[in-house]
Structure formats: structure tokens, C-alpha cells
Image (tube, rainbow, N blue to C red; front, side, top):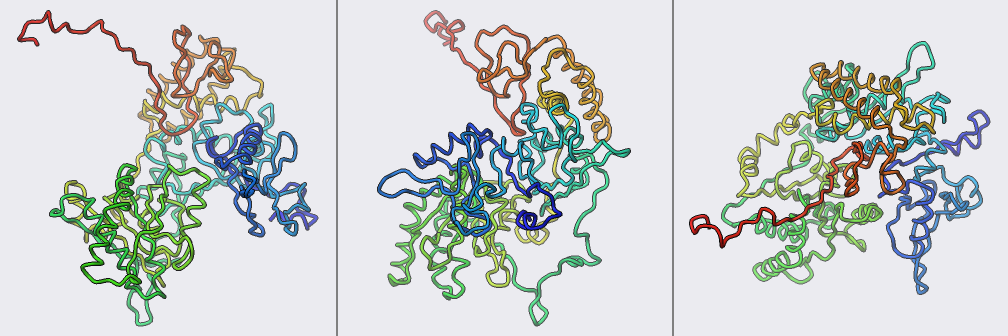
Length: 596
């Protein structure tokens, strides 16, 4: 789109661009942090926070490249334009966005400061960043607001929420509390009728979607797309795949394995892993690729660690026994040579490389034998060659089970998926799923649990109401505005947005909401804070209004209440100090024998 714009005369001078808006642990949030990260990236093999590994126009490799014998590495494609800014420029001089056009570079932004300055056409982010609106006033530019809080350009008109079913539970409740503020910032009030943004949410596994959308976005009119057909499995947009003779084409097949006689689920794992590894050798080479890589899903990192140990000792030993028992020749015998771990324990810049390695086909260098994955594969991992998966233990929810098992068998016409679920005989829930295995899978999508979103429950209000209120005040007021004096009018407008949403979604909680609003107004007006930030690093602990949720107050500080304000929508456990005292120690010598 930006290339077309540059060649046309009637598409304006503003570039079509894309930005990724994530936390500081993934991408740099400031130009200072970006330059520091670039220097570290050149000096050593540090985490690459710039994400872009190939030019999206020509495919040329970008990112860290080892220098060879000299040591260190080069950051190819990441160009420091000035002492404070970094630009993506394709290293291929012939590329449309290459060195010949370095003044333009690629229209891609990963640094928050660059996103606020350029206001990209399309922004990809997470709902966690909404919490930072209470801390970062520069984010107002994303909503088309100027330094004084007035509307300069149109706000975002389209919001696309992927994987809607994940915005539920505690996370969904926090998001639902902030959404009235976000919607107001995205609403254009300049005309006679306010224009709200259009919201499109996508998900493959959801139940009671109307109630969830109401609690999240306050929208009572929801249209499901594609709509249901007149017959089961039939709609204008899709139909069951059939062979030439009219029979149903092979799809994903589920296989349940449980053994109470083997003692432990690890023993069953060893036998299943060995059978799938060696069994792939019996498949004709033309069809072997889809079932060569066994994608293992584990519900916890503890179970994943146990499986790593099995791959190093027990599984090779059992394969050796199979070889001796069945007389398998060396050329037809298989070892788990290349294993991979795909979990959150890997660095963020290693995840794309790991996914790229999973795409290596049978016979190519680096083709993975066994991949051990956690919930990181639940969304976004779309590799067509994978056809075999082993799930160890029933996942927590049916929605997760569907999402995880959907990673294999995506090319149903050439490599139908096989999902092997191993159940633990000692776990009552696993036994229940095994006993009703057929009926459960015949109505799999009907088993999806309804999501729970309660944005106006008392714990949610205590945790996030002040953060959402401050976010609206700071984004719509002058950027230099401080918390003193208490902005009663702006406070009433912000809390009024939340109250109007509560009246629409959950009127029973209005009294609770009013009491929390009154309490926060009283604390703010009596606190007489002159600074927003009360953190030790970059703030004023004595005069600040807010500190990061989960951070401990300075020992011995005798100051009025400071609001613990979230920087993320997810749980953050606060730190506490423990002191062991002997004031209540029991003297065993002086106690009667019976008391001892």
C-alpha cells in the first residue's frame, strides 16, 4: 500500500505504516532503550527486541548476523538514523525499501516513541498496553488527540480482537473495566452524532458470545459470521469435505490412551513416544513428512521437564528394546535426534526461529523429531506440515483442547491429523474424559465452557477503577497537568463513563461502584499529591499519586495512601517483607511434659 501511495499523486504524503505496541520486555518502549538494545545486540548475542528478521518486501535476511572469527555480530537492517532514532532499512540495495531509499526505510515501527510520533495506519498490540494509558500521556496521539487533549484527527475506526475467548476470567474482567474509557477515546465526538468504532472479534471456540461481548464492549447488537446454515454443518461459506464417491473425507482423528497397570503416566509416555517415533519409519516416504515430527503438548512446565528427562534416557532405552525385540535393521531404526522446546522459557526472539525450524520438512537438515510445547502453541502456530500430536493429560478447558489439537492436520487433504491424548489413571478428571471419550469428541464444540467476565465485581474495582479513571483524565487533559488540585470535573466524566457501562451491563453492582468511586475521590482530594508517579525510579515516592502494582512501599515511609496502579491487565503479586521474631517463642524447658 505504501509503495502504491508513493507512485500515485492523489493518496497524500502520509505513509501507510504498521506498528507493534508491546511491553518493554519484548520491544523497546523509548528511543533511549532502543539505542541501548542495539548496542548490546552488536556486542553480544543478546535478546533481539526489534523482531523483524526478514524484509517483508523482498525477503532478505535482517537482524543479528555473526561477524565470524572477529567475534560479535552485526545488526543488519537496523539503522541508527540519528543519535535518538532507529529505522528499518533492507540491506539489499536493489530492494524498493533498501539502502537507496534509506531516508524512507520500511514503514514499520516497534519502538513506542516512534509509534506515538508517527501514528501508524495499523497497530498490532495486546490489551495489556491499555493499563499503560494511566502512565504514558504520549499515547493520546494514537487516539487522534493533541497535546491539549483536543481532537486533531479521526480516532481509530476499526478494532479487531483476535482470539476473543482468551479475553475472559480475571483478564477479561480487567479489560471490561477499561473498555468504557478506550471506547470513549476511540469515539469521534466532533459531529452531531458520536461515531463509535466498529469492533470485529474472531474466535474458533466460544460459547455465550453475546453475553461476553456485552460485558466487554457494552454492545448488545452482535452479528455472528458466518451465520448458521439451514442444516448442521452446512452454510454458504463452508461445507463438509467429501470424496468423489460422496463419503466424508478423512479429518482429524483422536486417540485416547490410558493404562492403570503400567503405574504412571510417564511410563505410558515412553511407550507412546517410542511407538510414534519408530512407526513413522513404516510410512511410505512420500507421506512421511506429516508424521515425522511429533508435537507434544504439556499442561505445565513441570510436566515438560519430566518429558525432557524421558527423551534423554527412558525413551532411547525403550527404543533399543524394540530394536532387539523386532529385529529392526540399523537403516530402519530411528532415534529422537533433534528435539525442541517451544515454551515461554525461550527468549522472545528465539520463538520465530523455532517456528521456522518446525517448517523444515522430512529429509532436510534440522527437521525436528520431537517438539515439546506449552500453551504458547495454543494460538498463532499455523504450520501446515504437522500431522501428529501427543497431548499429555487433558487440558484445563475444552476450548484449549480444541485450539491445541487444531495445530495439526491443517492440510486434511494430504495429511489428516492424528491426535493422541494420554490420560493419567491416577487423575479422576482424566479417567472421566477417557470413559466418555467417544461421546465427548462426537460433540466436542458443544462442550465448550461459557466464558466469565465480571468487570464490576468489587475486587476488580479496587484493583483497576482508579487506573482507568486516571487514564482517561491524563489522555484528555493537557499533557502537563498534575494531580493537584483534584480535577473533580474530569474525575466525574471518567467515572461517569464507567458508571454508564455498569448500568447497561450489571445494574446490581451500581451501589458497590458508587461507594468505590466516592472512596477514590475522597483519597485523591485529601492526598494533595503534586506528582503522578510515586515510584522510586523516575518518580517521587513522597508526592506521587500512583506506584506500580506489585512494588513494595519504602520501608518506614509514613505517607498517605498511594494507589497501586497496574501496568498490565494480568495478575501481579505484591512483594512483602517478613521478619522472624522470637517474641512468641515457646520455651520447651519451662513447659509441662504434657504440653511438650
